[in-house]
Length: 299
Image 1 (tube, helix red, strand yellow):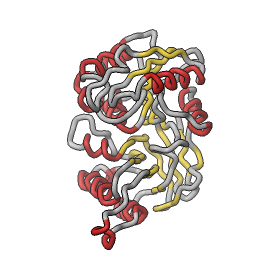
Image 2 (cartoon, one colour; image 1 turned 180 degrees about the horizontal axis):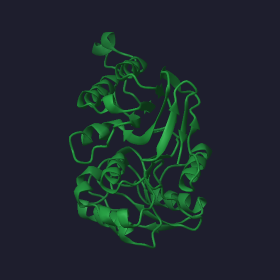
Image 3 (cartoon, one colour; image 1 turned 90 degrees about the vertical axis):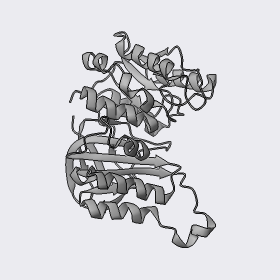
Image 4 (cartoon, helix red, strand yellow; image 1 turned 60 degrees about the vertical axis):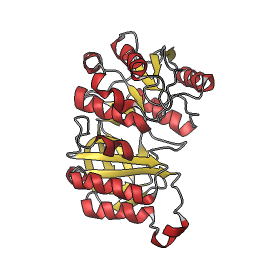
């Protein structure tokens, strides 16, 4: 699978295919992030639109994304934020344009749906990394820069825990756990066979994480994978008082999944809704060494 990269003076389209921006401040930060990486920001016509919890109606969000994919003068597409909305436009994205001229598509959270669709429709690599409006830490900026210039953006997952031993090689797939579950049973669900699956989430109670992981396991998705990298599960709501006696620890739930699937697995990798995060080329070949707690990109 071809891994696209960008040059220093790349023209980077800023689009909002999911949730709305908080205003000009988000947009200005996004433009500055592009410039800090040596690129030239090209702002979508509808990025400041709002329709409730969406960044404009489906047609407006789709138009900005498709315009960026079709335009040969655009070298990369950086989604400004996540939220929700990408699934609503999956059927009408111009995948043919991206197959004709592969270019990096960057984002995470709800953008997981776009990454999965690109993999299934274009057989192309896309980049699970910070959204353009993020306040990039040094760690995140360096990983993103390496990812977009053909380097290895991962490495040692400091602070991660080994849940199941061993070493595995495979394509990287995954992203936000809730979106992966929402895609299950659709034509846009990732191909988990022989893959290294990366999963993260935010604002989800432990029982909901348990339920979503059980769903993926019951679909057979996790049973066919080569390895698992659990990222960060942040801002977990506290259990209600009446549920306190039945509370469970997230580590126990993740450990049960690792044990049931029986593949190399780590938890706590720098992936997800955190300041320091890897940018991962989904679709690229990678090697997970659970004992060393490393993830290496092989392409």
